[in-house]
Image (cartoon, rainbow, N blue to C red; front, side):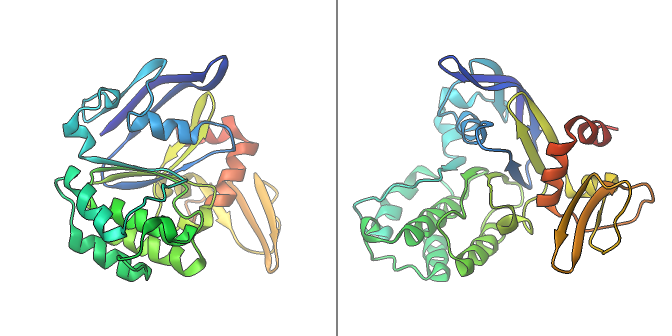
Length: 275
């Protein structure tokens, strides 16, 4: 379990995060959402111990990630948005670096690369941006980590590769892994992320499962305008509306529409989810 309590961080005089508290449970793929500049990448680097909180605390299974204990490092993997173009063949890189993760599987790495249609004998610094990103994703998923922090993993991937990524993410991670994915590309991942975290600079606006969101809000994909709509977006065949679920009906959560609802009604949404 990951526990974040009253977290604060600044770059010099510029405050990025303040009073951030949340709990991240194992066995979930969290979607970390937020507007530009709210500190999503900063939060990921704090969670994995690359930065030290200026106030508050983070505990990962009872340990402080900034202590950089080998026993915790071998259980986690941080995948940044911009990955390194290493001067080595993909297979050689995996063989040399996989040893730092006890659960690393070279067979899994090769299987994922094959699904991604990437040549394991190609040097990583000669790959296209998409091939390089897929190689790093394959390496990350092959490490068998218990804690994954991924920053915009679908950036640079074409449409077929995004589908391959979703499949690999669910197939090659353990059931008790805690996975946090920061993304602006909500539609790339809406079929795999649950719960959803929506971050603000000074608050966690939402940390809720899709089931909880659907319990409190109804997502209407019809044509008739609802008078109590908190958010409405016109579509070619009608509109998407979000309004309080007062009848207990089930509906499919539209994460992007919900995100926009949250930012239009921050206090209301937060109070409804906390009821």
